[in-house]
Image 1 (cartoon, rainbow, N blue to C red):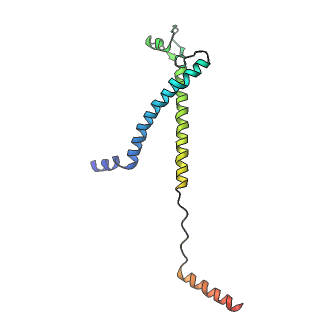
Image 2: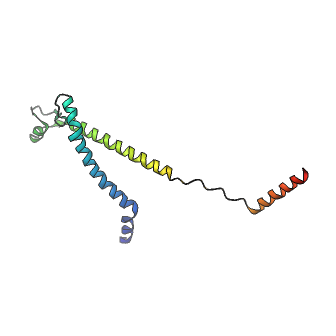
Image 3: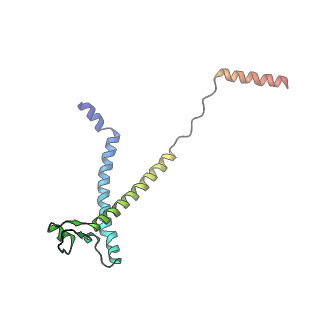
Length: 140
């Protein structure tokens, strides 16, 4: 059983999948930073200095100046701004994956082999064709 596990673990597909997961996690961190630190601040300024991460609905009845203060007090909240940031992060990742898959499909299409030539007809058929052609020539 140990040998089977070793064989499974070192197959190319498993290693490729592990590398993909690691790179995907790193890419997710970059996208989160892109959304939180680069995209959302200018949008917030355009909309009147709104910090999207602080947009929330307080369900507990208290008054809190920020989401962090509400969480610290243990208030139940609906975190609309955090959700919007996550939706934008998802859309960026989906867009990047779309173009990655599109590029991979283009490469696959380029590497498709030309269709193989049909096999030569059997020798008997060739001989029969020659006989036919000779008979046609005699009749004409």
